[in-house]
Amino acid sequence: MLIVNIKGLVGLHPKDKLVIRGNEMASLPVLENAWLLIENDLIKDFGRMDEMPPAVSSLPTIDVQEKYVFPSWCDSHTHIVFAASREEEFAMKIEGKSYEEIAAAGGGILNSARKLQQATEDELFKRASNRLQQMIMMGTGAIEIKSGYGLTVESELKMLRVIRRLKQQFPIPVKATFLAAHAYPAEYKENHQGYIDLIINEMLPQIAAGKLADYIDVFCEKGFFSVEETDLILQAGAKYGLKPKIHANQLSVSGGVEVGVKNDAVSVDHLEETDENVINSLKNSDTIVTLLPSCSFYLGIPFANAKGLIAADLPVALATDYNPGSTPSGNMNFVVSLACIKMKILPEQAINAATINGAAAMEISEDFGSIAIGKKANLFITKPMSSVAYLPYSFGQPQIETVILNGKIYNG
Image 1 (tube, rainbow, N blue to C red):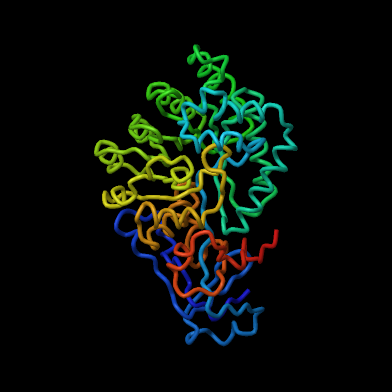
Image 2: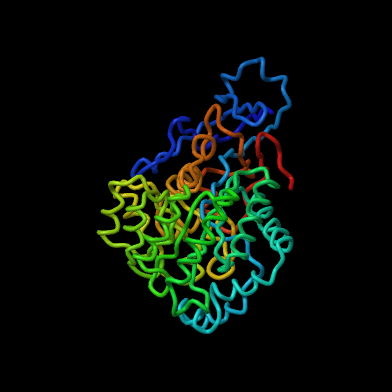
């Protein structure tokens, strides 16, 4: 496949550039008036139209005048396997009820857990498939999906099997994260160690035996899992080869970032609450900071200090956090817009965060997240646009016209 007359080919980072840190995130290489050659499922070559080799002009061609070609979004934090939406909590949020108050009233994670435990594996797979299909058509070309609405041995394994089926069914990379440490089930409310023992002694061995997860996650937060409990669970996961990707500092400066760094976390996610100690703990690590602005938007909580994190020379990624309670949306385009509008970062920084750094947060940036010869041809073509910045500027309006996955036009 040959794509010609590309107004701008976006994100031309060198193939060996696996993550982008700090001030470098403001650099988003764009080749204007370009062509791109795809062979099989890989990017074969590209260049300026006035330098296109005559030999390629006979190939099947897509003419995209006035349109941009982007690498696919890489969404590194989602919870899309859930049984039902939770709009019954919507009014509670509007009335000003806090996350903790909704949970105390029987809502929150335990609400989703009850519904998921009653759902069959096939039901969960069908509903998650519909969500993932919609996300792909909005430009997502790689995704991480967490368990964590099961909270029993049987239901956590059921969720991870659904994620494995999604990985087998869909033409994009799907990473699985084990998040049984999402909340304490009601029966373990006064027996935290009992639930931790269940995770470590019963769930982890079965997950490892079935090769059902790539990562382990813990919700390290006041009222959920303490720093000490988080450390214990992460170390147990490491014995089975599961690397940490943890929820940290969503509601408070919890110590979650520091325990993540201590355990060599691939990423620490949320960070709506930060201070200098948090930033300093990240400076000497390879841990990626994954920010989730649509969660802040929906819950009405502070937006993460993206500018401060970038100024500290840290690698920042963006993801949707798609889940039924705090972010019922999988639209990465809106996430990129929010990062610009509410976090005050530049379009170039936001796009890098949503592509190559999102890929790095899933450890797939050798093959995904930028335009480079030899990388996978997971791309999207926009509608006619005046500039790269128009995509986040025109928030809420669909600007993606064509999705290409593994070198083929994807129509669902």
